[in-house]
Image (cartoon, rainbow, N blue to C red; front, side, top):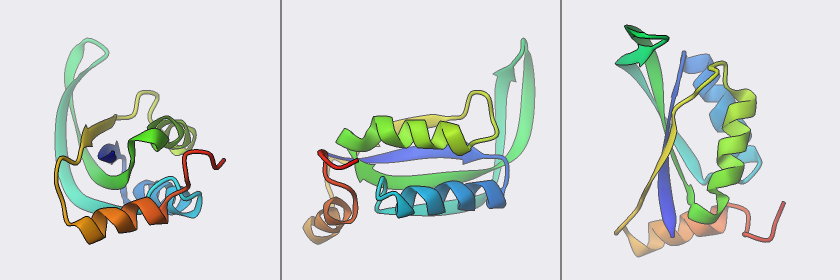
Length: 108
């Protein structure tokens, strides 16, 4: 099964570093970086806000734990957002490309 993983980062430079590393490690097929995200959230007992960047990562569900571990090792936040949703439908050719672009389950 293919998934989309959402990760927010503090800025474009951090998002680019995470994206580049995950692609090079074949943990994701690709990453989209969306700038200009304004986030509101509870943190340390109060409402906080931050300007962030959103990463949209495409991969396989079997690689989620490795993606999570890699993101945590590269991320500046103590509790980074790393959430995944299933891709329930999509272009057959695109989904094949995602599968062919990432490491096999047995790899790494």
